[in-house]
Length: 188
Image 1: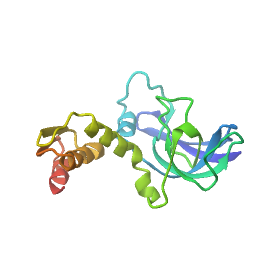
Image 2: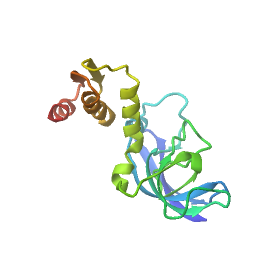
Image 3: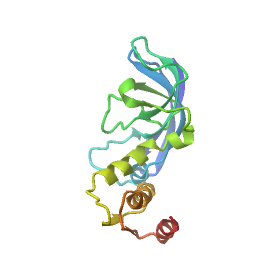
Image 4: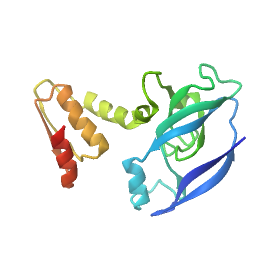
């Protein structure tokens, strides 16, 4: 059993820190969270903009990872000390991993991805938004020499815009209402 702090959205613009005692089931691991990034969805929820299926209070955090500190008796392929990314989208997979705005999280192995030694954890914890960007690029039907447009230049939009050029777009156009995001895109 381990005591952990968990960041939970009680109502728009009100996050509280809850203390929970958690232990793992035989098919789970316990991960000490290294870092959890704030997603644009987390910001929307914080500001009170969320779909009707989101019920408050909700504990947040789904972009990050850490180090395994305990392994359930039926877990194979993962060991104490392994560095992992945790897929913790509790809205999609409520029986999966705990939310990552925590000190520790429980997770079944299907919610884990091992981090190679040559990748530092700060970078590795960005895997989820990077995966979304790469998925968008691979599935947009881009062909060599095309012109592509990205609407919305937050973190993922910036990555997509850069990736489109690397994957063969002749011209990649970014659109956003925020001039600072447009300026950042022009630097790339």
